[in-house]
Image (cartoon, rainbow, N blue to C red; front, side, top):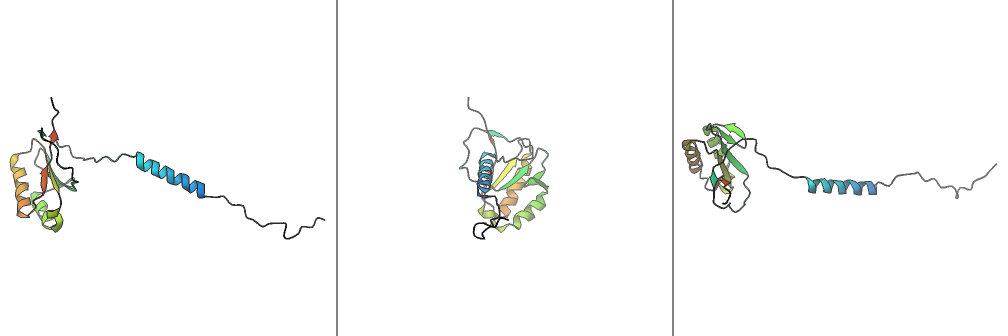
Length: 138
């Protein structure tokens, strides 16, 4: 019979060190975050008018009013009537401090764009831009 001394036998539980696995997961996460492209995709098909002017200052434009060629108004890519748009703008007191972008199709009747301007003026919204596409230089 073999006798073991209590001190010579260790009672270690085998374990796997997870630190390298966590390091690899974080490196993969960083790799995918850096390599992913974030595309700002607008589902509306609006053909913007062309201009030869330079682009603006490049400020971020958080709020967009779009108007298609059939005079349908869209607020944040959702269809809305002119009255609903005015109510929405009235209920946003901080809108006067933010930049607003109006995307009107080049085939849109002029009257609907003027109507949007009137709604903005009645609600004291003074900071807004009109979206255009730049023409290529010759």
